[in-house]
Image (cartoon, rainbow, N blue to C red; front, side, top):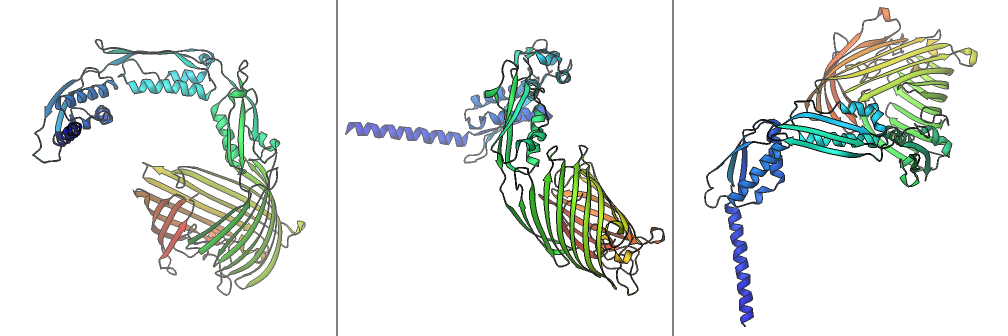
Length: 587
């Protein structure tokens, strides 16, 4: 029985020790308050104390020693090596209180250590690299306060630049941060041996379904060219932009590297995108009402990278079906391609009823400066009623177009602009029922000020010339009014009218809009706007229609969701308010 009694006594003793420790921890928990510091000094000291886990210490002497160490470490990182610290304890909490006892430390940081010299010597090919010469300019100036974080960041920037530019064997041969506390002086002494700069080797791809000669033009560097990480990143981006692959990763293959000549081949692992992609959607806008969309896409149909898609949109006022076949050109698959298109479009809006069939073949060039240029040939037949006119018109017309969109800032950009220009020419000479030419121009600009203010400007201009205007399809005539035109008026409700008072469509269009947005909170913005313009037959004999209003914008992940209320200004025939709901890009 004696062993059992002794073992029980041991357990009882351990239980009392644990219980006592718990009681001490509850009674003598501490917190610290730092005074005398501001800005980065205070933030760094508090971060250092938080990282040390000193809240678990319950003995006063040990707690104060750890706080002293944490404060000194936090200040030393920012160049203050000799601070003066004064400690004072707050009153002990009342019996049973859960509030910790507070230790206040008043800090006088003293004079900082200053950098009196900083040097980076370079050996290897980087010694003649202009980018490293630029990097040298980031060394601290004589007399600047020592900052250990800046020292470590500078070393990382040297190594990062070396890696980006292909100095894969680079290393620091000297890495010294000397500090004299007595003189309060510090010196950076760095030496970096970059070794030789490596060069791009041949690029190979595996796992892909597209012919190699279609992928080669996507490579933005030549075999033997000095290695540069941005060019490798551009290659990966180019592969992603084709839409042919669900995954495309190209990286240096050091296992196959030519060490003697410092050449590293690039190896690309490709995963084909799914052969069939189906998308459906539901939307709503005031102009079109409820809208249902569906799309079937085959991102690649053969080893030449051709793609096929069918799309359909159904709303109460308009229904469309479109098919397109894209054929990239081998010499520049991303920038140059042919697009064959066919479509059906039914419209029943205001005084317009139309059934349209169209075919088109268009050649596209995507330019390096962001402009897209296209030249195409269109065939169209439209059986329509516009007001009191019934007609069937067939058109054969070439088109030339230029457009560019630029933006920064995601789905609701803080900076951007867009421009679109097109010219259509139809002649009986090449099979059209009528002669006409039409010019269209649209533009938008977004600028931001002081982070919370946005200005958006838009314009649209159009001009049709034809001696047979009544036979021009309604889709090519001009109407104004609606969300992206003149708010306060119904969608496409402004144009000249015929003898029966029905909308006829116009030969000229000119509209402009200015909108101011203010960030209220988070993703919510308020808006105030004014729109003006008109669709007429003669721009020199018109009285512009003007609408103004207020709105709300919500910055959703897929673009701004908008709610506007507007009314016409100075128009005795239109005095009511109009509401607009929409989702979509602003450019």
